[in-house]
Image (cartoon, rainbow, N blue to C red; front, side, top):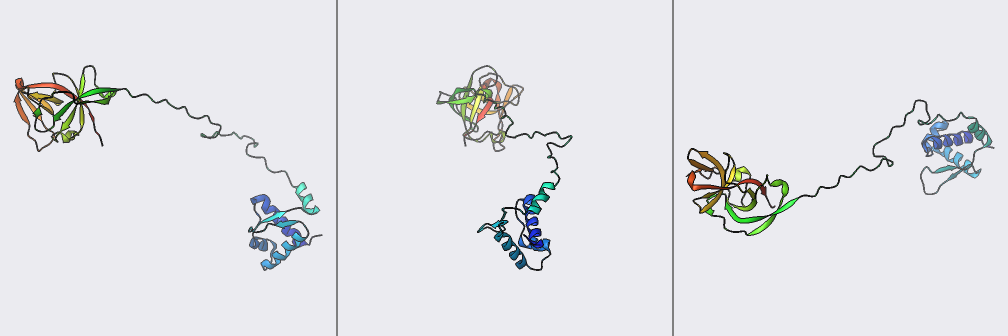
Amino acid sequence: MLTRKQLELLNFIRDRLDRDGVPPSFDEMKEALDLRSKSGIHRLITALEERGFIRRLAHRARALEIIRLPEALERRAEAAPPAAPAAADAPGFSPRVIKGDRNTPPPEVTPLTPVHALELPVMGRIAAGVPIEAIAEVSHHIAVPGAMLSGRGNHYALEVKGDSMIEAGINDGDIVVIREQGTADNGDIVVALVEDQEATLKRYRRRGNMIALEAANPAYETRMIPDHLVRVQGRLVGLIRSY
């Protein structure tokens, strides 16, 4: 038979295990039983262990396990009202599906669209500075995304030499993609062939019977050339830069 305090302590430990899943601390037991010191709790726990109601687990703090209950506590547990229905069983409950749950099918994977690329001839170097001699021959080829090529017609590439177009975003060493055409609108960046001898990459503007070839760098002056001495070889449609 258990004393009143032993029964109170065993009942308190059981209630805390049912509620929290872990036993109470010695301080909590002391306060619950209104004892002055923890030594009284030690004596009560030892007595419960000797009578086979609880077991202390070695090397674990606050590790108590209830092995059995006296008849008085078992009858009380049987007479207790049934637990409240779970939220899923409560009236008016509507389950909510959370996106990303394990039952949610994986999102559709959009297949990658292959990038269409074309090889263009690199026709040597083009001056973005002082004009150099006219484009001569193909030096090598380069792959260019098809989306960069504007409309129909032939295209070619040139390696930029110089910094006169730097404020237009064209740096020394860049590869420019050119669409072959013999005309240009004011403001277009074009490959201009001057006197059939020198080629340059500049912004094109017509002023009467003169052609202005404008740099995009204040360090370079605009060249004014009679229109019969300037032939447009193509218009800039793209740029490729290596880092």
